[in-house]
Length: 361
Image (cartoon, rainbow, N blue to C red):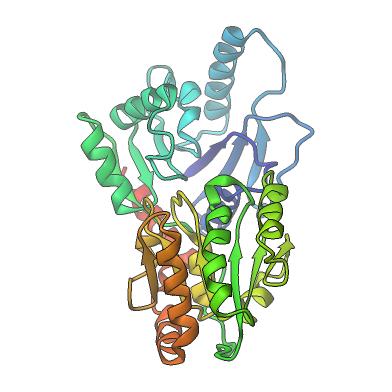
């Protein structure tokens, strides 16, 4: 079977590109599959993540044309590419790419098309263009993959006519269960993410005021970078929390960060999947997150391996952090329960769900 991932730009370093790289590499292990990645970007942009040597990587077009003519041209270039490489299944890595692929239902009807959502479906629910493409993809596509059962239910409630096979398949985690011993005596809270508003680090700072008023000997390490770094850092300075909250920048060694921490906090305003929660749990960390659509509730079992907090209630978040700080037995229990579901996000397990889908459509 010839399978092609159609992407916007593999030169980015985001989760969408990483998941494409991981899944394509895993599917390559089946020698009955020939895996292609076709990207709509400039030729001078190389993939950020290293692709498997068996993945055939190509660029659709780097020409500049009047918008409407460019769209028509690219649709026919895509058809030509599919025909030349005898592609059986096209996986649209972004639903917005439907503007190029949906016309192929007429031009190349035997091609199977899968649409793959990487964000919570509520994230851009009010975007008219995305909604129209999603509606058509659900009606005309062969399959539509979302990250969580809640995303699938939301689509069923929102769109009346769904002909595509609709199912949820989780993301792949590259972290296996750590053999490191959980550090019960650690006094470090850790968070990881882009320093932008949707990731909620301003909410984390609000919660931290109450936490460090009671536990000034603890610290909070935040890993990541982003456009709102200066704003978050100024908040910390204005609240005189410089000695407690440390912005650690980006790191290629998150294992070290996780292994030196006592608990993980995810303050996101929206989180489609919550891969960082799984990474933290793989390192035996108790986890705390706002119960926002829809990722965290699929990873954290409230009161078992962590706490789910009423969205944006920073007082409740602070109280939950303090509760774990003050109760070593509870922290240990959450740590012991943290790794129980880690294996279901491993590459081979997730890829098997994709293989079954590919066989069924």
